[in-house]
Length: 136
Image 1 (cartoon, rainbow, N blue to C red):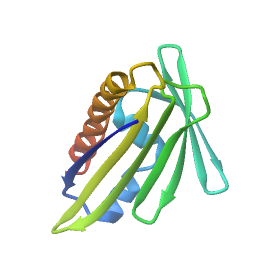
Image 2 (cartoon, helix red, strand yellow):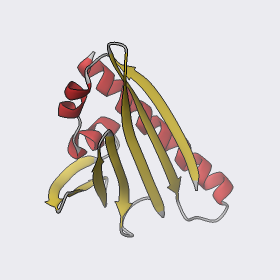
Image 3 (tube, rainbow, N blue to C red):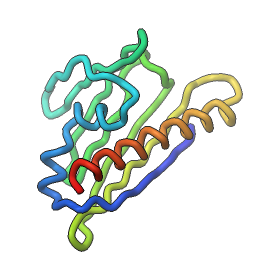
């Protein structure tokens, strides 16, 4: 498993950020998958998403200052994937941090997981860039 992390200052108040971010918008901001279904289940949100014949379920658990989400089950591109999305107030906005761990479960994980983390970092950069553009 490889981990990656990105941070971005977003010129918005925490309440604005909380209104803009929900499980469906997080997946949409990342830009790799379309959201097909969102289901609420006992404080957890299950997002079914996919692209080009691939479907997966992401389980989102809210936290006081963000989200934790992970791929649920065996359907999906990863053997394992988790992400934390958190924010802290700073000056006239918030610093948003996205941290993720990925594993493809393939031979030669030093290479395959490195490529997966590189791609995941691009998705997280896109998430934070789009969020900052929308709220900036």
